[in-house]
Length: 176
Length: 117
Image (cartoon, rainbow over all chains, first blue to last red; front, side):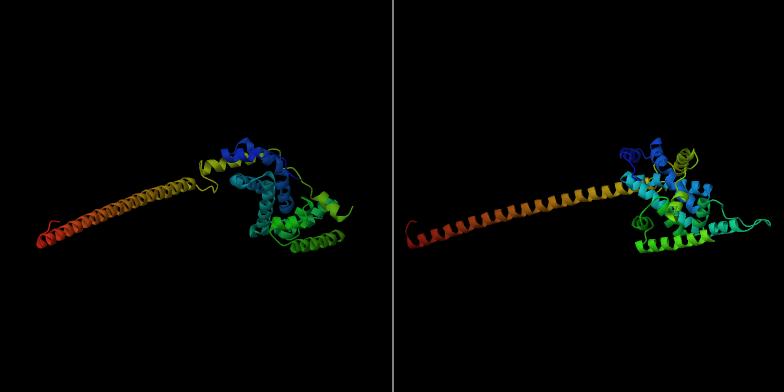
């Protein structure tokens, strides 16, 4: 989906260099995209909101370098994706994810979510960080493999390979 | 539905909390206060001021250097002009002396032969 705000807000924000309500427009316009990318990757509302806020603070700092609304959207998508991958690769994060699935005080392991959408989100959350981001960009943002390759700075063949293997893993997970 | 459609449905966009935008702005304002005003894009305090200072110093050096070079060029040109004038004056003087010598030589020849020039 292409953004349609006028270029003036970028120019005005650049001139004023302040966190004025002018920044509200891009935040409100893109908050669902940035937050959902983080949410589907990290599978935690709190972590996703924190990461999304950090991305918008970084946007504010880099606003002067961005030339158009489309450039802003692409920038947000790229920075959010890379931050999610970094976050998922952090050792502390891995430990958190690991302890999440451990049985707590003798309780039974977390059962698979009964509804298909929830079960799919759970299975997507079990993919590797890069594969997870590829799937989220493909199905949340409906990007083509070439666009995903551009966002994640990898070859189209790598993207296609990730998609193929991820879909096979998801099908297998659903059948289990 | 096939897996593609199921995934689109499962991974559709979701809105953040209603006060998300306000919290982003508050965070930006807080980071601005912590970093100080006019910190520049990098967010490091005093870096912008340091950049301006370096630019001003560089400009002063360039302007000062240009002025000194111009003055030096002017003095070189003036020296060349004076040298050319002296050379011309010496040349004229030399020609005059040669002319006088010639006349003196011609006059003494006539005197020896007893004729008026």
